Image (cartoon, rainbow, N blue to C red; front, side):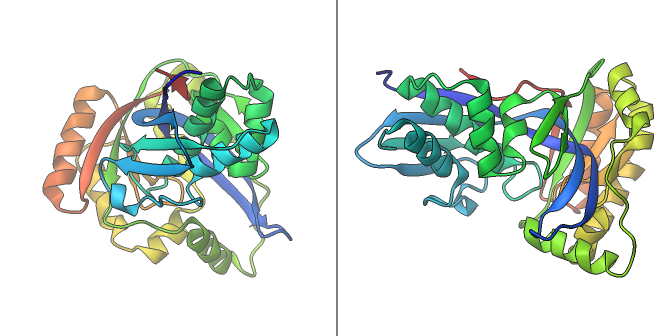
Length: 299
């Protein structure tokens, strides 16, 4: 048996998040266009006497280290399918913002799954891994595959999306997190009594991605959860305004927030926007990253 396996896994930005009305099961149908971006966590698994989780890096103190952690749940799920005891030490080296709408927890789940599969030699197929990912959470399958994809259903049913070039981003990290269920609850409150359209991917957005056209992508970006996130965290509007004033082509809340995402024309523009955001005092940190990025990868 291998002594340890490390998997690197990217963050994501939702370039479109179209949200349908609440379903009877409490979930919402989505049309979720994911783009993996070059901010990464690394998960290392090593055989141990019992399952345990440790974490290092920015905001590591906010990461749960018990069986609720998606990395731990991934190890338990794979072990159960193959009749193995999930006795591993999972170490998460964190660089994706925590509770920031960038799927950091989901990324760790996908990374742990791939790493445990390699460590234990379970030989799981991509289909089996994706099936377990979908059981773990709506964003976990995309963290495994990376690149760009359209997610429907709860976001877990993926179709690859063609991307014709690199896109440059700045991510402004806010103080504290935002609860995804709370943001969806606020979406339901704000849309109560209105007809919520069926979610569908924007043809203009998919064309912009395929052509690698940043200006066209900027015009097509959308997030149906943005109003809910801003309702719960009004200060995010100042961050969005600061990035736009600094020259970003477009700005939006990333997923359920509170991280905000700024699309720029090129890497140099991204650095200028990041500097301006930091100087504005409207965010705790500003990170520059390009997309698309590969999915979970053994390193």
